[in-house]
Amino acid sequence: MTREQLHKVVLDALGSVAPELELDGIDPKKDLRDQCDLDSVDFFNVIVAVHAATGIDIPEVDYPKVASLDALVAYLQAKTGTG
Image: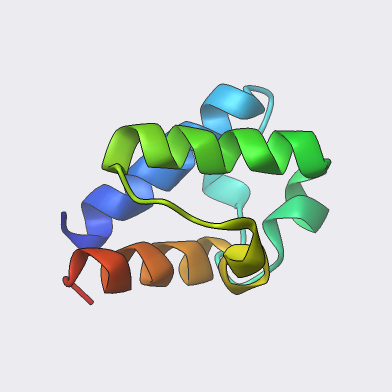
């Protein structure tokens, strides 16, 4: 998957978990939990949705590595070998 496709996957996952979010207003460098007001269950559901769309496992130990939109997309790129 390309970076753009992975970016869309993450935004789609966020939108499915928190449909009230203004996805265009997300700062790609800021912590998703903080700026999107996601609790741990919401964040987990985002990870589950990303996994469902990509087949990429993101273990809980890696959650700090995928805290922002840019970080999550970069992580997915690295796992797919496209980054």
